[in-house]
Length: 139
Image (cartoon, rainbow, N blue to C red; front, side, top):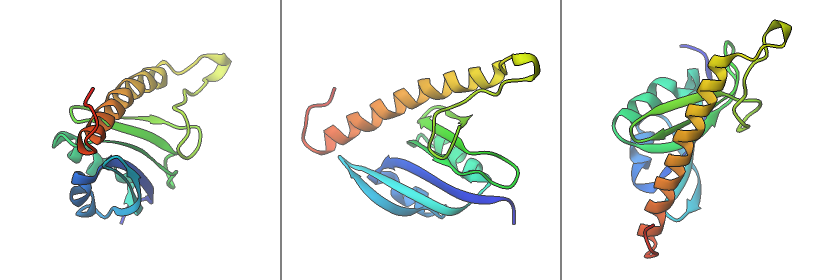
């Protein structure tokens, strides 16, 4: 069965069927052509499914709750890359662990930097898409 938790994704409305095939249900319509989806039973936070969708060029961002063997996580796909980072809480900011003697885990910092870069690009692409669908100007 695996280690399951809830995962939440914001994506384009046109990509909803791809997520539904993987067990995500519509949570709410965000407007501007965007939808928030939820999978209450995402295996290992849905990482395998989300990675596969990112490889298909799907743009999205979201988070998953903690499971039995991992903590909460934030993630994003800009349609080219899928990245994730440890999170301080559900839908929180990316965090870096502090190691003994006060040293910061540099791997966590690199992960967070990559996450914020991809998240920024994903949000820009999703916003651009929403404005194009609503008849507004495309930036």
